[in-house]
Length: 599
Ligand code: ATP
Ligand code: MG
Image (cartoon, rainbow, N blue to C red; front, side):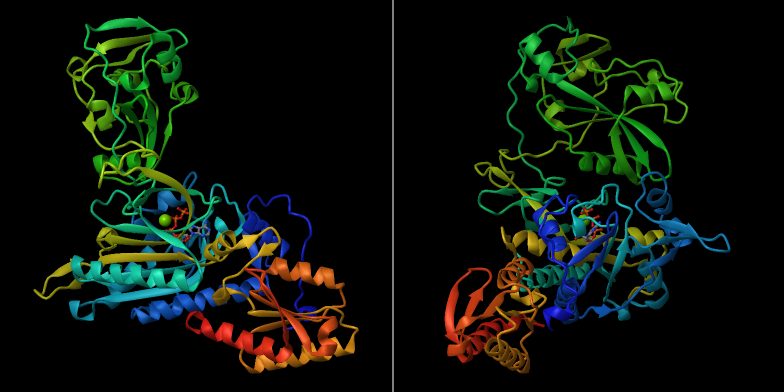
């Protein structure tokens, strides 16, 4: 391909709306253009990258025996009602774009495909003899993300590979899950990415395993916690660890404390001479349930600890046996909107009276009460007195009456001691989630009544797994991991081209001839070469070559008269002056040496 024919438009200035390096570079390098919020056009260079990633993913998926398919993006509401997800995915801040057709039937644009595939499997797979089966597809997904940002990292239309496996028993599911884990490791390493596999949240369905693959980068949206010895790594949403030890509050009689303007742990502790681990703080939250219910929740946790909202959502789903969409702190305005009397915010205790909810217009009229072990393990503590500006000291759980159910709800943090070895300390890193593998169990097959006949002749729902890779996010993550001040630096296997030949002065016939000759030789050797034959100044062409990040550059300049060229490696910036023939041989060797990663 000739750069003069490539429609290449590069930008010198950093686009105002791009915050992170990879997003800036992809825009500047003419790889992508924003069409509207969270929606991008993939320009020819980008499309070549995406096709290469796709080909690697296809090869590795096919090698596991998975079958490629293509499912519809428009999906009937009916299916999503059967799985119980329509309401949650469309109402309020739901992620699904949805519409009505000319007959008034509701449809959604697929954010994911569990519903469609599970109902198909139920129709097509009737007997245990047909199992296991894994189907995968690579296509655009649609999610009306609340905060689309960072370019392709969090788009509203993006490319995903999703796979779903169907099994007759859990052990078989585990086998495919492990095979997918290995296939994923190969995919990321072939794409030239360094990834960390971390334990991930698997929702409320207990026991199911789930693992995310993270590209470590400062710009990552996820926080991951890794033990010093590398034996434990988890997404913070899921991570467990030992909390720091509490400083005991000496036992004393129960007494009221006047605590005006001491509504936060910090102000309370400073004024009363306490430390945060001697206080039980109570968070008042509202949970939005899949079926539309709104449930007030009281969470007790030690004053120095933070709440992990994902753990809370899972615990609530288990308690209520219903999907919980999200939780958020209750504000004073919401209390007024429910036509309730004011609550003693800043002085709430675990035993806040349900009577406060009796007049609620759309909330459940009692609190669901949970406590983290850091709170329930305290023998003596300070907590709110449920009256404005008053706390109680010398409290114990028995004096409070009912002890709330104790469940792990705390957020693990860097510096915590590890569970597998308490001499190990958790460290924190940021990560970009490029893949996720997940043992779904029978959640969807039960909901959609997708069953097969087992070897005993009885009907049973399938065991299922699902496995995703964000193809377009992965492409940008590669840039986030491989770039420098001057531009991108693509790993060879997914670079849009392997070599760029820059002709310093295209008016110079000798240079032009030598470049053309090398260009056709490289193509004949099946090397993907780009020829910068533009009439631009040499400096402009060098800058563009750095920016678009092709792994190898050959500069044909003044020394062309002597048959010599410069060979430059983009990553190391190493320059070699070679004859055109030597440069050709070097490229063939370098690129052939990486043949195993090529597609
Ligand atoms: P996240 O936690 O980042 O929102 P998710 O857990 O909702 O992602 P999955 O449903 O597991 O994502 O989707 C599979 C993969 O698709 C993810 O691992 C990620 O790489 C990619 N992905 C998810 N959402 C987006 C998005 N909005 N834009 C680009 N890629 C995405
Ligand atoms: Mg995920």
